[in-house]
Image 1 (cartoon, rainbow, N blue to C red):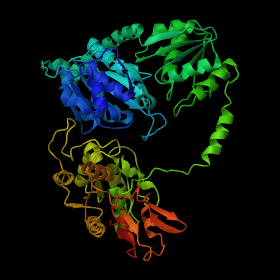
Image 2: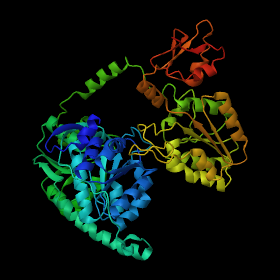
Image 3: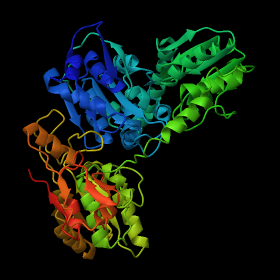
Image 4: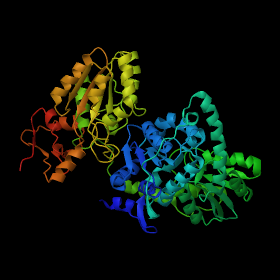
Length: 626
């Protein structure tokens, strides 16, 4: 068992260990006695499911990588309705996918505790937007907890289960990237044995949401919200952590860490109210805090969620108190991550204190140092089959097609020289947008989607294309894994989250089952054959699907290392090479390097895929021989 796996199952209350926020959430699963865990991998939440998957069988609980977040919530909700504690983990945009189930699940409720983790991504480090999911708590009327570090991330899983069972509602747990991916000391609690078998007690009036029942359940939900407010007022996570004279600060989540550092740096006598249960908010606790200060600063990333509520409470309870945030000032941005510097400078302006650190000097030194560093744009890995697929697409279309793309490693295809990717919205949208584009333009439309994303969200759009006779080509880049988020399994791999074999679902079988008449499957490294298959798809009068299947290069190299096999790289035959740079200009592989005008291959990066050899007009690239 791995070191992390040992920590997750170690029953040593009081022991201190270092854990990522996501690993701490996974540990919380076992301290809370959760029997069912579901997820769809998405950064910054991926390590939660991955960590649980490591030890799920040994712990005797059920874990699955669901086909998407909606199914993950429905699966876990089914368990919780049947009396087994559950947890689902997803990134913030995953909640959009799950929202249809989530909104009505709030009416239905649960019988055993159920925690839904939403990992928000301020600054869009690995996401297409930076939405603030605190508004999902407001929209759904569900309770929400927000940890500020790994310790709270673990403890709030347990507390979230308790709140969930008190209210018979799912409880949202909102992390952000810095909490998810920061390693902190965590004191372990006692493990609880999970109940893994439940019992379904029929109650159609509660669980069957036809309108007549839904109207009743909505009223019941509103009563539960009142109870949740009482819990929030007494919550140990809604606390005044410092008293002060100069100013009052209200904050939550990761922003609390910046506040503490900023207050100490400025030597401020500030009162700090930290809110760990951010929905429903403790109105009386906040109002009492407001009455103590002439000036209140609300420090929170992204949307002014707290500030809106604080201002509403102030109007009724402390109308003379000045509220500072982002709504009436430019002190705090409404986008991106916060930092200690940002909070120091904002508090300094409000309190008219001198900023104690010469940040501008630091900026200058950093800028000077940065000049010495070469830019390192994100690129596809050496040997990535997607590079071969994109080269084939460009050759087959002559560069004249429109290419809706999707969420995955292959989104990097927008980089030169490949430049494949013209519109990207969300999971599965490549197929859907392709349908609309194909109806209003004359050029070919070749949409790109990954294997995991195909199963996640592209199938309905493919059915739509068949039904409405949209002339599109959907290219499925099947690298046999969910590569971008850490090589998690999906239905096309035939492996489950428990590490056991499941039924392998093939993309081409799904496509044919949807009614697609032309379905081609080919290895993109067989360039000539792949071009021919794609050209036939382009000629087809109706929707066509081409599956480019070749394993992720990282999987291939990892398997070779496991077996002790040598990774053979390519080499340039100097006497044949004319320095035309065709391989570099056409492929952009990081292993191809130009030194003094000549192409060389970095054997530390090259994995010997030989795509470069297939594009070399002078047959100047060969596999290295011992």
